[in-house]
Image: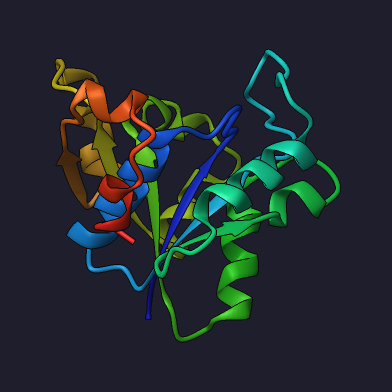
Amino acid sequence: MRIGIFGGSFDPIHHGHLIAAASLGEALKLDEVRLVVAGRQPLKNTGHGAAAEYRAAMVELAVRGSTRLTASRVEVTRAGPSYTVDTLRGFRAERKDAELVLLLGADAAKELPRWHQADAIRDLAQIEVFERCFQDLAQLQHLLVNYIFFLIFFAVESDVLISDDHQMLDQYS
Protein backbone atom coordinates (compact mmCIF):
# COMPACT_ATOMS: atom_id res chain seq x y z
CA MET A 1 0.00 0.00 0.00
CA ARG A 2 1.24 3.48 -0.94
CA ILE A 3 0.11 6.28 1.36
CA GLY A 4 0.60 9.94 0.52
CA ILE A 5 1.06 12.37 3.39
CA PHE A 6 -0.12 15.89 2.51
CA GLY A 7 0.25 18.18 5.51
CA GLY A 8 -0.71 21.78 5.98
CA SER A 9 -2.50 24.44 7.95
CA PHE A 10 -5.60 24.15 5.77
CA ASP A 11 -6.69 27.55 7.06
CA PRO A 12 -9.04 27.17 5.33
CA ILE A 13 -8.95 24.12 3.09
CA HIS A 14 -9.94 24.95 -0.50
CA HIS A 15 -10.37 23.37 -3.91
CA GLY A 16 -6.70 23.91 -4.72
CA HIS A 17 -5.67 21.66 -1.81
CA LEU A 18 -8.15 18.98 -2.81
CA ILE A 19 -7.26 19.04 -6.49
CA ALA A 20 -3.54 18.91 -5.68
CA ALA A 21 -3.99 15.98 -3.28
CA ALA A 22 -6.25 14.08 -5.66
CA SER A 23 -4.06 14.78 -8.71
CA LEU A 24 -0.91 13.70 -6.89
CA GLY A 25 -2.69 10.60 -5.62
CA GLU A 26 -3.59 9.65 -9.16
CA ALA A 27 -0.24 10.59 -10.74
CA LEU A 28 1.80 8.73 -8.11
CA LYS A 29 -0.60 5.78 -7.90
CA LEU A 30 -1.24 6.30 -4.19
CA ASP A 31 -3.87 4.13 -2.53
CA GLU A 32 -4.62 6.85 0.02
CA VAL A 33 -3.71 10.51 0.52
CA ARG A 34 -3.90 11.64 4.13
CA LEU A 35 -4.46 15.35 4.60
CA VAL A 36 -2.69 15.96 7.90
CA VAL A 37 -3.91 19.06 9.70
CA ALA A 38 -1.02 20.85 11.40
CA GLY A 39 -1.33 21.50 15.10
CA ARG A 40 1.46 23.79 16.27
CA GLN A 41 3.93 24.49 13.48
CA PRO A 42 7.36 25.34 14.93
CA LEU A 43 8.60 27.22 11.84
CA LYS A 44 5.45 29.24 11.30
CA ASN A 45 5.78 32.71 12.81
CA THR A 46 2.15 33.69 12.49
CA GLY A 47 -0.80 32.01 14.13
CA HIS A 48 -3.75 30.46 12.40
CA GLY A 49 -7.03 32.18 11.68
CA ALA A 50 -9.00 29.17 12.90
CA ALA A 51 -8.29 26.84 15.81
CA ALA A 52 -6.82 23.44 14.93
CA GLU A 53 -10.06 21.62 15.85
CA TYR A 54 -12.05 23.77 13.42
CA ARG A 55 -9.47 23.34 10.65
CA ALA A 56 -9.56 19.56 11.18
CA ALA A 57 -13.36 19.56 11.02
CA MET A 58 -13.23 21.53 7.75
CA VAL A 59 -10.82 19.01 6.23
CA GLU A 60 -12.99 16.10 7.35
CA LEU A 61 -16.01 17.67 5.68
CA ALA A 62 -14.03 18.43 2.52
CA VAL A 63 -12.87 14.83 2.03
CA ARG A 64 -16.10 13.16 3.11
CA GLY A 65 -17.16 10.66 0.48
CA SER A 66 -13.75 10.46 -1.21
CA THR A 67 -12.36 7.01 -1.86
CA ARG A 68 -8.74 8.21 -1.81
CA LEU A 69 -8.53 11.35 0.34
CA THR A 70 -8.71 11.05 4.13
CA ALA A 71 -8.31 13.52 6.99
CA SER A 72 -5.85 13.05 9.84
CA ARG A 73 -5.93 14.81 13.20
CA VAL A 74 -2.72 13.18 14.42
CA GLU A 75 -0.86 16.51 14.74
CA VAL A 76 -3.87 18.26 16.24
CA THR A 77 -4.25 15.72 19.03
CA ARG A 78 -0.54 15.22 19.74
CA ALA A 79 0.92 17.49 22.43
CA GLY A 80 3.84 19.73 21.56
CA PRO A 81 5.09 20.99 18.22
CA SER A 82 3.95 19.35 14.99
CA TYR A 83 7.07 17.71 13.65
CA THR A 84 6.69 15.85 10.36
CA VAL A 85 9.26 13.29 11.49
CA ASP A 86 7.02 12.33 14.44
CA THR A 87 3.99 12.07 12.19
CA LEU A 88 5.83 9.82 9.76
CA ARG A 89 7.12 7.62 12.58
CA GLY A 90 3.57 7.25 13.87
CA PHE A 91 2.25 6.30 10.43
CA ARG A 92 5.16 3.87 9.98
CA ALA A 93 4.35 2.19 13.31
CA GLU A 94 0.69 1.98 12.30
CA ARG A 95 1.37 0.49 8.85
CA LYS A 96 4.79 -1.16 8.75
CA ASP A 97 4.10 -2.58 5.29
CA ALA A 98 3.08 0.74 3.71
CA GLU A 99 5.24 2.88 1.48
CA LEU A 100 4.97 6.46 2.78
CA VAL A 101 5.17 9.31 0.28
CA LEU A 102 5.53 12.82 1.68
CA LEU A 103 3.89 15.37 -0.62
CA LEU A 104 5.40 18.84 -0.35
CA GLY A 105 4.66 22.06 -2.14
CA ALA A 106 7.80 23.70 -3.52
CA ASP A 107 7.47 26.51 -0.96
CA ALA A 108 7.57 24.01 1.92
CA ALA A 109 10.33 21.96 0.27
CA LYS A 110 12.61 25.00 0.23
CA GLU A 111 12.43 24.98 4.04
CA LEU A 112 13.04 21.24 4.40
CA PRO A 113 16.69 21.58 5.53
CA ARG A 114 15.44 23.62 8.52
CA TRP A 115 12.90 20.99 9.59
CA HIS A 116 13.37 18.97 12.76
CA GLN A 117 15.39 15.81 11.91
CA ALA A 118 15.20 16.43 8.16
CA ASP A 119 17.55 13.53 7.39
CA ALA A 120 15.28 11.12 9.27
CA ILE A 121 12.33 12.34 7.18
CA ARG A 122 14.18 11.27 4.06
CA ASP A 123 14.68 7.79 5.56
CA LEU A 124 11.02 7.42 6.56
CA ALA A 125 9.30 8.51 3.35
CA GLN A 126 9.81 9.05 -0.33
CA ILE A 127 9.60 12.82 -0.85
CA GLU A 128 7.65 14.20 -3.79
CA VAL A 129 7.56 17.94 -4.49
CA PHE A 130 4.93 19.72 -6.52
CA GLU A 131 4.60 23.25 -7.80
CA ARG A 132 1.35 24.93 -8.69
CA CYS A 133 2.91 27.16 -11.31
CA PHE A 134 6.12 27.30 -13.27
CA GLN A 135 8.92 29.31 -11.71
CA ASP A 136 12.70 29.39 -11.45
CA LEU A 137 13.82 25.98 -10.17
CA ALA A 138 17.37 27.03 -9.34
CA GLN A 139 16.31 27.47 -5.71
CA LEU A 140 15.25 23.82 -5.56
CA GLN A 141 18.42 22.35 -7.07
CA HIS A 142 20.10 21.50 -3.73
CA LEU A 143 16.92 19.77 -2.58
CA LEU A 144 16.79 17.60 -5.68
CA VAL A 145 20.21 16.24 -4.81
CA ASN A 146 19.65 15.70 -1.10
CA TYR A 147 15.99 14.98 -0.48
CA ILE A 148 13.65 14.79 -3.42
CA PHE A 149 13.15 11.83 -5.68
CA PHE A 150 10.68 13.35 -8.08
CA LEU A 151 9.35 16.79 -8.97
CA ILE A 152 5.83 17.22 -10.26
CA PHE A 153 4.39 20.24 -12.00
CA PHE A 154 0.75 20.83 -12.55
CA ALA A 155 -1.42 23.74 -13.49
CA VAL A 156 -4.90 24.31 -12.16
CA GLU A 157 -7.35 26.41 -14.11
CA SER A 158 -8.31 29.41 -12.00
CA ASP A 159 -12.02 28.87 -12.56
CA VAL A 160 -11.77 25.49 -10.80
CA LEU A 161 -10.51 27.18 -7.66
CA ILE A 162 -13.59 29.34 -7.35
CA SER A 163 -16.11 26.82 -8.61
CA ASP A 164 -18.57 25.02 -6.38
CA ASP A 165 -18.91 22.27 -8.96
CA HIS A 166 -17.76 19.08 -7.23
CA GLN A 167 -17.73 17.08 -10.46
CA MET A 168 -14.12 18.16 -11.01
CA LEU A 169 -13.19 16.81 -7.59
CA ASP A 170 -15.24 13.65 -8.00
CA GLN A 171 -13.17 12.48 -10.95
CA TYR A 172 -10.06 12.44 -8.71
CA SER A 173 -11.55 10.75 -5.65
